[in-house]
Amino acid sequence: MEPFDVYPVFDVEIEKGIGCRTYDKLGIEYLDFYGGHAVISVGHSHPFFVQKLKSQAEKLIFYSNTIVNKFQHELAEKLGKISGYEDYALFLVNSGAEANENALKLASFHNGRKKVISFKKSFHGRTSIAARVTDNPKIIAPINEGLEVEFFDLNDIDRVRNSLDKRDVCAVIIEGIQGIGGIQIPDAHFLNQLSDACKATGTVLILDEIQSGYGRSGKFFAHQHAGIRPDLITTAKGMGNGYPIGGVLISPIFKPSHGLLGTTFGGNHLACVAAIAVLDIMKAESLVQNAQKVGKFLVSELKQIPQIKAVRGLGLMIGLEFEEPIKDIRSRLLFEQKIFTGVSGTNIIRLLPPLSLPMGDAKLFIEKLKLVLQHEPADVSNAF
Ligand SMILES: Cc1ncc(COP(=O)(O)O)c(C=O)c1O
Image 1: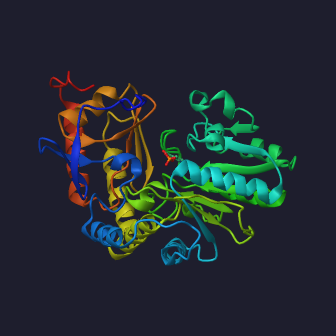
Image 2: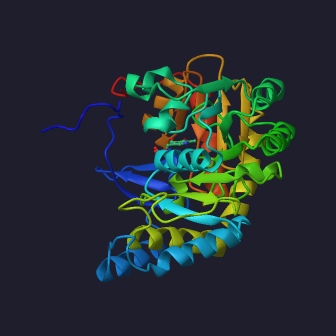
């Protein structure tokens, strides 16, 4: 058997990671400005994280949600404190799509409605409802088509309000910062108007913080730059620093009942220990503050590079938009300069490094990017 071939891959085999660096099978070092798609938060193989996972794995990896799991309580308490959502409850899952799937179900159970509002360029995952509320027809299978969804332009409050006023919308789902859509940041004013309109019409507001959350934007959640408090917040990616875990933060307006939601693997012992270790490291090493400081430096330096048409970003979630397709720039960064970066569409490079990125590595990235933009390409014919 072979893996089902759905991923275009670079011809690089990473074997080891330490902090913000990764190493291929030949021992060649790569600077990680992609974080394995915004997943690596506290750094690759952080010693405290590894030690916590190791010692838990030696004791108990998994038992089901039919017994008391003290780690779920510890994780919920620590996440509540660090994020400022102490009065919310936590439902644990295994991935981002699953978090959104459960948030949307919870919203519909709550108000009995079916229609969803989402935004153009959004991405919310590939499972059933999550795929349907994603603005990409390519990932929507005929079996997903049933749900009624309206897609509006980001920041278009008038059209959203017109729809909400009919009082038949179950939920509005919006990313704290659109990631795959090219690092599009919703206006703070728009988010406040949206939050008010949802409250006034009995619509549930879901903030998808799967990519933009967990300190990435320089605040724990990106929507906290706008000062709103959504009804449901979804997380995954950086939550487990590579160990699969996701969650839904649930406001006290939602009342649980036994059997309402459920999962076999969600919230298992090892996953919770991984997520607790992440929060402990984030606090001990002030990683949210680091993301803010180093991100600010990067944005201001990047804005001075004339070849870049636009720089958008908050914290360590940064998009570099170019006039021309970036395929060549990105492969030269990887194969000539040994730097991993992300992509969005054809013209945007996405930077999603670990939150622990040192200032020195930020400076190194700027130097190397300038080299790529100023000089003729070397032979990168083996790039793809
Ligand atoms: C904003 C956002 N929501 C949801 C998802 C889906 O997460 P997962 O791939 O863990 O299912 C992603 C993944 O990239 C994402 O960026």
